[in-house]
Length: 115
Image 1 (cartoon, helix red, strand yellow):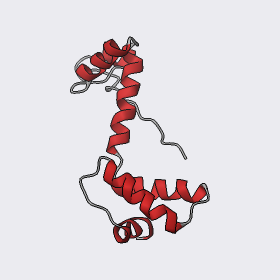
Image 2 (image 1 turned 30 degrees about the vertical axis):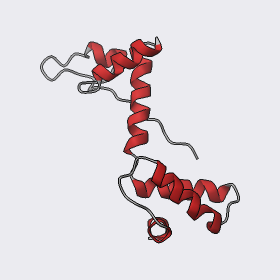
Image 3 (image 1 turned 90 degrees about the vertical axis):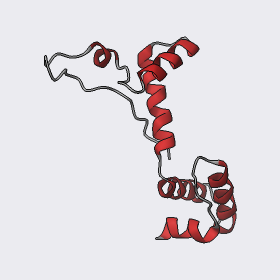
Image 4 (image 1 turned 180 degrees about the horizontal axis):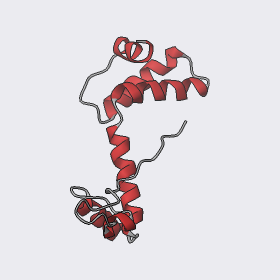
């Protein structure tokens, strides 16, 4: 199960002119991520449109809430034939090593998956 990538793009028309902006036509991220997009483009040597997609994907990855992450990973591990007895320790370690500012335990993980 793959995550749908998101892109960081500005609105397509300027409120004052109704014309497409240069940034929009190039698929470049609006402020405040524009500087990050430029940095990524420069450091990787890719067009800004590609860097904007990378930045969008990274923001989507880090923007996934813990409950969505736990449910998604639980499903992925079940689809790979893992039992719940194997899944809970894996999820506990992944949540601890991930970007979530909460401490997880098997009870909390079960509540996130099953409600």
